[in-house]
Image 1 (cartoon, rainbow, N blue to C red):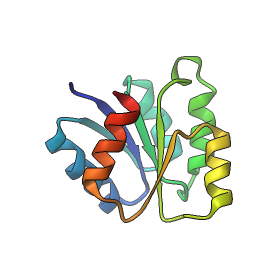
Image 2 (cartoon, rainbow, N blue to C red):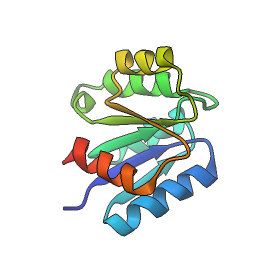
Image 3 (cartoon, rainbow, N blue to C red):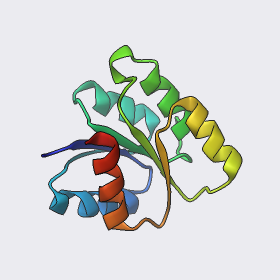
Length: 121
């Protein structure tokens, strides 16, 4: 089963790491460099799951999650937050915004693949 994932992160290195973790597992990976770019990329695809960073320019992860959840047909798309933040209040805020899960960087590629298969499968 091939899953389509949108990864939104302002770090090119992180986008490349996500791509390298997911491609061998058979995922189709689309990337965006911030929330604004993410919404534009999202317009042309139907992702099975979304990965987003929190701290980004133009539109941060919270704003991006809000914008995705505001779209009727995207309400059920799982969103994993992939960030260096680990504060409980940040997790709570992300969950309240509509995030499905939380993964702290640096991430374990195998765990990322498993988490995506779990939420999107």
